[in-house]
Image (tube, rainbow, N blue to C red; front, side, top):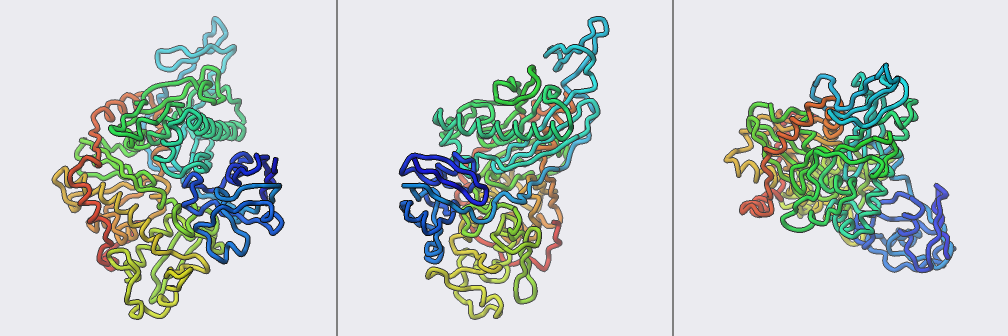
Length: 566
């Protein structure tokens, strides 16, 4: 059978003749983007074959590759078959220097963990308990070693933290790419894959193996044995919770999208593939609905949203545009399918927030200026740079309100005209070197921002509110943290009335999960708050379609009046 070797890592895999290079990459655990799950529509699984390897490969399709790339030996993993041994070169390194936000705002709560240890001097043993339940007895006095782990499972990334439950201190942090992205970028695709037993087993095992690896790293760095970790609190969207618990998410793919897991429950850690204390458990916080999960409920806890007076919009901008509208303690929650564009996926030059990604685009005189992560040579554009770029293009008139490239390019300043050039017969806008945005890229961003804005506007409309009546907006999540108020408003994702009212609260899924580890009462508080949240299904709202169409338009320029609250 053919052996496929990947450079520069040296990883290899043996596959049957006629198997795809994508199969080989997955077997070799080479992490490459394949957000379309190998159907050949995204063009992200781009690699290079030398001349000798090309004679031993069958190239089925070259969709999304330019003529120059094909001539230079580039192929797509998903549409290239191996008939013999191949050497594959992976360009760049998508995970090198991957920037993952780990922290966020937190609620100040007293230290009162669910987990307890009590030394029984008469029997010379330590009793480990969770609330009223006795979990285990340990020989000797181990009361000074009591640890828990909080995990935020994002659609794209994972963040874990190790807490000393005797002091409440965070003693370590770890982050990684969610391994499921190699199979599917968005939640709905993962629901589809995991609706079959084999797919569920695959996505569950890969996810838990990565979490277990992170726990091992944290324990090693803190120089504590794994057996002194007794609980793991996992927060994530509803699909991620199902996959972590090894429960089929199939009901999330069909109306009425009823989850099979409601949360506020424990499961044995060992049964889920986590190597901690033998009596260790995993706590799943409560969820709201099929598409509003515990990442949002623990975010509500971290920001104390239920106790915040006035009208507050809490929104996690990402592949799932989850949001909560709070009016003096009354909460409504919903989710919109923004898709993977905000993560740089489905964008021709899109990438994750790693070294060389364009992360900022600013208007400078009659031109634009780009900034890359680590000030490295531009190799692509990540979500924050994409937001900035499209916002700047709208403000400068490079695209009109409908999102089309201007038909009056001759009226643009010379530096901007020079950036509008043809590529494969179509006009694109060059940002830095060979990094560009196409008309299709603009449409992807437009659809994503319209989905989130339509969710916001529909929620306001349902409550008889106008944007001006919002007292504040809290933007949660790693992606949202790297955005600016100016770009959010210039692109039309937020109404202009939110200028000066936006706060970026960071990874509240992680800090909320930590609060559940360190304060027992927080769990019951969150359960009660979640039980009173009204879940809003936008697909059945009579106004949503009309609002969505209106949200597609880019607004008139408002930059001069804005105060940047980045």
